[in-house]
Amino acid sequence: MDINNLFSVEGKVAIVTGGSRGIGEMITSGFLANGVKVYISARKAPALIEKAKELSQKYNQECIPIPCDLSSNEGIEEFTNTIIQKEDGIDFLVNNAGAAWAEPYETFSEQGWDKVMNLNVKSMFFITQKIKPLLTKRASVDDPSRVINIGSIDGLNVPALETFSYSASKAAVHHLTRVMAAKLVKENILVNAIAPGPYPSMMLGPAVNHDYSEIEKRNPRHRVGTPEDIAGLAIFLCSRAGAYTVGETITSDGGIVKTASHNLS
Figure 1 (cartoon, helix red, strand yellow):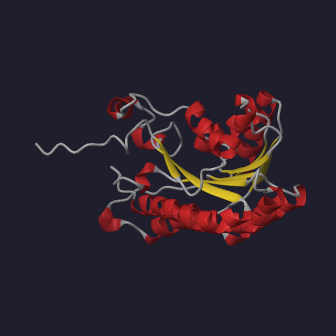
Figure 2 (cartoon, rainbow, N blue to C red; figure 1 turned 180 degrees about the horizontal axis):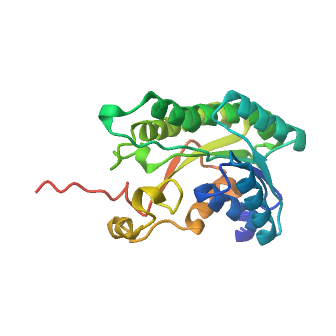
């Protein structure tokens, strides 16, 4: 058993939505560093293009930007049509693009509900649906294609912040992962989810003024996540090592969810 081949993803082609920053950038970097050609998407074209150029130069591997708004059906169509024109097959799809919204319960708005649900759940489903023909072309029993949906521990635990639509959307992602896995495994496409805990990102950072010290104190590992943590898990799921893992939601949170206890004294 060759450890290099067991975890190898070299020569594969991946899509990482929201791949220009935060957890998406961490996963993209891990793929590029290990020989994967990666397409990344984001709404803000100049920043996306600059990030793709930076990552391509850093890892000497192709990182191709596709600016688009995946919160709308039109944006999803534009994105998937661009991919179809460029590639005859895709090995990995990482559905990472997402949004959050915090607002007091008494005033929580329909806008905050719809924006988050549309991007975090609806878009994830329809992107996978439309990319499926490309995933199928590369898939086989011995070398299946992969879909990784990025959920959150907020979809497993009750969150500390009033992010009602966000936590509901991530719980939906976790269950939709199981439903999609049951459907697509028959076509050698393996669907799993990762539920990250605290990682440095533009989603969590503003909520704590980019000071993670208190979060680190409360974390069982006494730190926040690193690029190696999340990229390593994604590479496991996409490599031969993860080829018998289907329909799972795997936490990457330093133990917050699984080691939580209740002090009733």
